[in-house]
Image: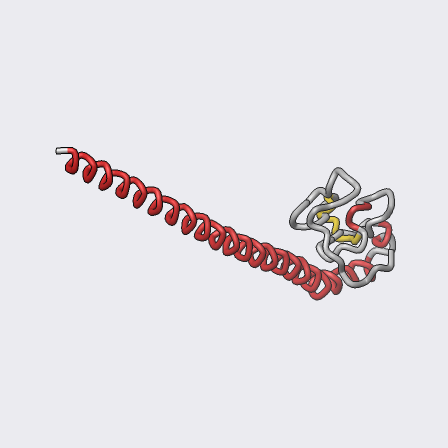
Length: 147
């Protein structure tokens, strides 16, 4: 009878050991899988972010081109008929350079957009109204450090 109980406890210890080993391996594989998923999501987010910035810039560049192509001839005609026409402020879109007092965290950043639309400055896609601090976590060099 003693041999039976020793065998039973031996089998139980072996089963517990195997279960512990199984869950340990599963935990390691789960951690590896989470690392791969995190890396994939970071790459995906970066691609989406870059494409979004390019799309927004392309849209605004198209708008500038359409403005120049269609509205400038109309403005010229109006100038011919009304000598006071130039006194009207026709600036729909203007560019604002970052400076030490206005958007200092954006100086030299490739993400800086700096266009004013309808009186509202669009700083960049990540921070449309700018950042509150003197540095930005999304700052990237534009290669032209003349500021």
